[in-house]
Image 1: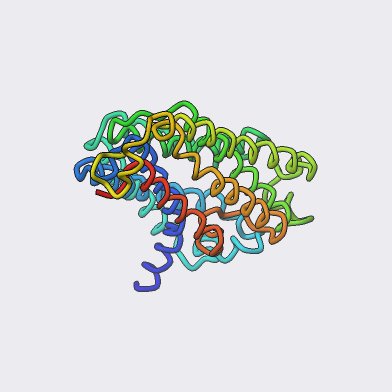
Image 2 (image 1 turned 90 degrees about the vertical axis):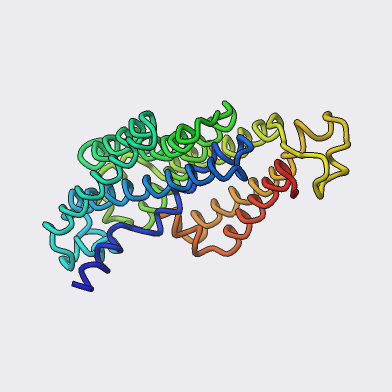
Length: 309
């Protein structure tokens, strides 16, 4: 029984829950990070979405069981390896889906709609959409966009248009990086596990990667240039609070742009030099340079936008 629980936890992919922190995007850039009610609501939405995502992951492993057995790494997953019985996995997936959607409906009707849309989209991906080139990548990227909007809906936050474009570009960047890493990892055996990889020539993947890497940092820069800050009198940044708005209100967040550019370049290096990228969450947790860059970026965003009271 203990081993079954452990295998269920592995199949739920707790490392992937890191992606669900993107639900805090709307909260942070709306200036509500330190409002207890808003913060607790956002964190609760992250928990609900994580339960739903785990349900989707289990369903995906059940659908892909035969394909995963041909994958050099995925064949070790509990369901593909036979360590986790299919009936138990199916029951857990259904239970998590019911619980998460019920909780989502109690939080917000529109949050529930977005959660349901995420589940339907990824079921469609597992069953059908992943067989079509370009559509498969757009579907993966859509999951990230839904996360951001779900988090914004949970606290009734606004998503800046440039921030939305940055999220879309970043999502496509990660999705293309995932495909490129999969193709490199599987080499000549890619057709056995994922036929769609044959429709992604290396040069095409390079073009896509370059395109979305550039749009990611450019759209972020445009967003940062326009995003208002929330510096108050009496904070540690008193000097900034007394400066003309021309120097503060619309430009200060630009100091985070070099960090974003570094992050994009580092991720590209990991994709091309170390053949990583198949799992963005694992890359983030395993690469100290990237993790440090993200940590510095977050601290700068909080200091610039809020100051310290």
